Length: 364
Ligand SMILES: Cc1cc2nc3c(=O)[nH]c(=O)nc-3n(C[C@H](O)[C@H](O)[C@H](O)COP(=O)(O)O)c2cc1C
Image 1 (cartoon, rainbow, N blue to C red):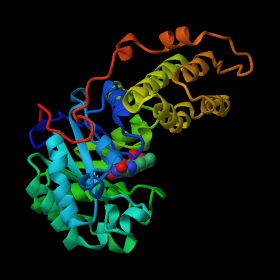
Image 2 (cartoon, helix red, strand yellow; image 1 turned 60 degrees about the vertical axis):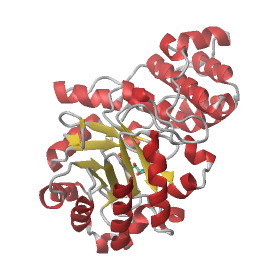
Image 3 (cartoon, rainbow, N blue to C red; image 1 turned 180 degrees about the vertical axis):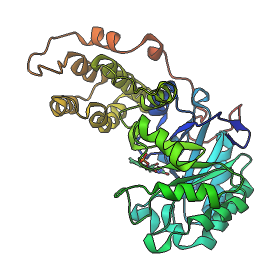
Image 4 (cartoon, rainbow, N blue to C red; image 1 turned 45 degrees about the vertical axis):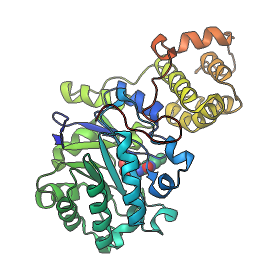
């Protein structure tokens, strides 16, 4: 399957855009485990136009993670139009428009899924981005605002007419938020009666290797996009591909492998955000990584107490999963060395963005 000039091969598996999750450190890990395409978290077009530092930081992309898309949102047509060249100059492989975010603060301004109540405006926003972009534009949306207004078949045709080059659909309505089941039968219908010449990316509840394959088989989508199933579980991309080839789901990573990836994730976060912010931001990741493990809450509690990277690594390395109370003491330096693969200790590459003002990259 192709999006514009990008050839993904058969049945690619994408990492979904996720706020506070799909940042460069996490994307690096997902890429290593085989994610075929990744997106930044959504970025406010208003924030970009007004040079907001937090929005500009989210534009960081690295050549190692290509193909990578930058996702923007906003309900103000002129702001979205003005934000598009800012994003375009960074050089992502594609620009994705978020028409699916269900959060009140976003939908009330016609951003995200809010625009599903105003399809003429959705069309104008999409045309504006397609006009301004020099690279493929894609859209991620939901089935409709609520059960009474599922218009995704018409929406798909309209967006394709605007010139988008792929459509990702989270098979829920805005009213469903993240609850209830994703309705995969709509993905099947979209493939048969909605999109004509562009790929359809299926999303929603493909949270395990078996379910990823099932989504491909039952709906005929061209790619599957994984959200929550990848949180604390970047291995899912590798496991899904092994499952497709062998029919067997590999055993979960050992405790040691898990600790090593958490340590690497932490290290990358600290490289990207600076030590203090990196340590704090990493705190939201622990529950995903240690979900279902014995004494996980005790470990999380210990990790939350620490504010320095080396101290966090020390806690990680010293934690005995089975006997939480009998910890062996490994000095921080040795713990860090043991946990982080040598390659990761090397500095991260320079991001495509040079500090505050966005600049073009050499590729894409
Ligand atoms: C923590 C979190 C943050 C999210 N942020 C975004 C976002 O920035 N942009 C977007 O299009 N969707 C976002 N989503 C929605 C996901 O991309 C995806 O559509 C949704 O989780 C359903 O897929 P899943 O069942 O595989 O998780 C987010 C979801 C989660 C759980």
